[in-house]
Amino acid sequence: MRFAWLRENSPNGLSIQPSFGGQVVFVAYNIAFWIPMVLAFTKVIEYDTAFRAFSGVIIVRAAFNLYRNNVLQPEQAMFFPFRSP
Image (cartoon, rainbow, N blue to C red; front, top):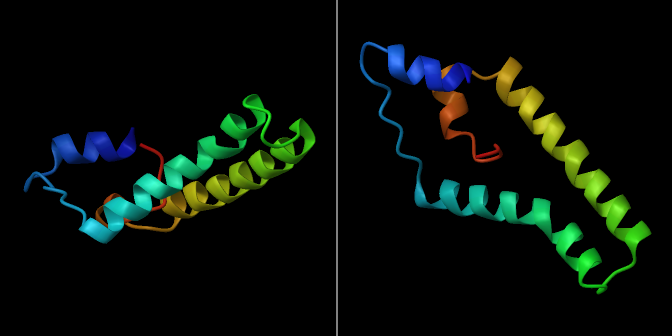
């Protein structure tokens, strides 16, 4: 929300165009979020394994989001590939 507000109220418009590599990392990072659930629901892996994997993914995402929101400047945060859509 903070970044959307900054984008709208910035004097220069903050035109953000991430690099191709950054976009690939962004997509892979967000696909990795869904993999444990999909594999568990299709019974490829057991539920307890999926729970552990999903818990690990959630912890990593929380750490990246804390870093992005509290450490990076708004201009840097828009280019940070490890973010939620």
